Length: 124
Image (cartoon, rainbow, N blue to C red; front, side, top):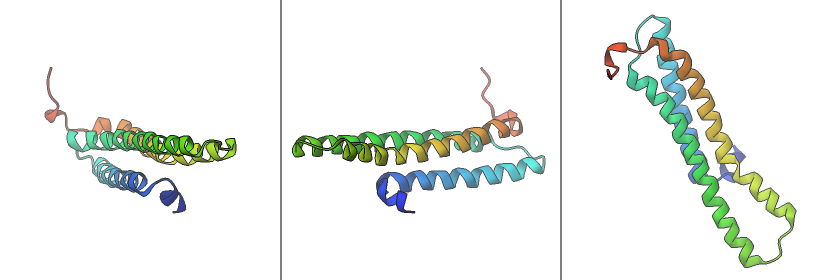
């Protein structure tokens, strides 16, 4: 759990909550699919949406962290490359977490698509 604090609580905790919500929706949908019941299109799309939202939030966390780090580098003047790379490594934590949530939710969404309720799909 140290990576949550190091990666920035304001970015990693929401990603973790979105990931847990996606896993709950995946479990509910998988249970309904095993019972041969249909899944609402809203629930199937919510799984994918939470994955993309968590990735976007992770990228936002990295960009805002890099912006703050750039200000600190400008104020400090000379900074060792090791310190810069350590900061870049830490800034990737929210992005990696967002990618993990997106990966799990998109794979789950793909396999749950056939069980969606087709009557609620918009006709074009």
